[in-house]
Image 1 (cartoon, one colour):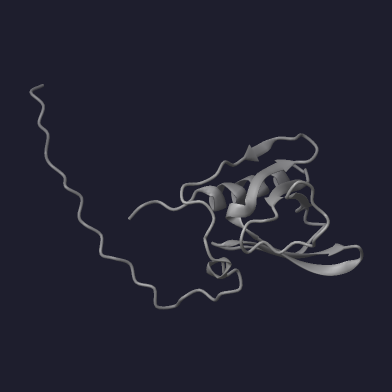
Image 2 (cartoon, one colour; image 1 turned 90 degrees about the vertical axis):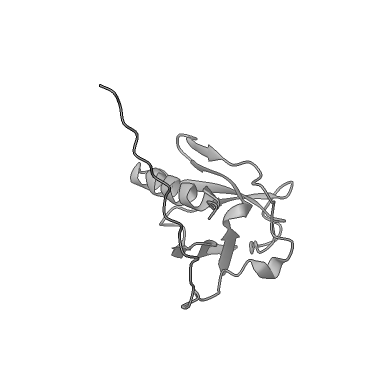
Length: 142
């Protein structure tokens, strides 16, 4: 089984690290990535910077597919959906420390419907049986 993307793990870890350091985590998002739900007109050059500070958002969920939360834009409650592939950077506003991400192999999904942030986890997921490792005894003439 091949390893999947490390981006979700890194983003969750960096978010926690930034918040634990008493800074405001900001993310840079590609507005054109399939499945992104952000208000139009708040970005520049196809990117939008969002504040993920706990005091600025409500109902933060970081699942296996992406980040979902609610915040206010122009005083209106707004639901934001960010597939992990859409996040190009995460950093602390105060220090600027964080990480930028490059394009991952395979690129974004071809069909926006494949990014299902509202989907329920599948209960009957089965994994292929794992092969036993091929171990051998190596003797040393010590």
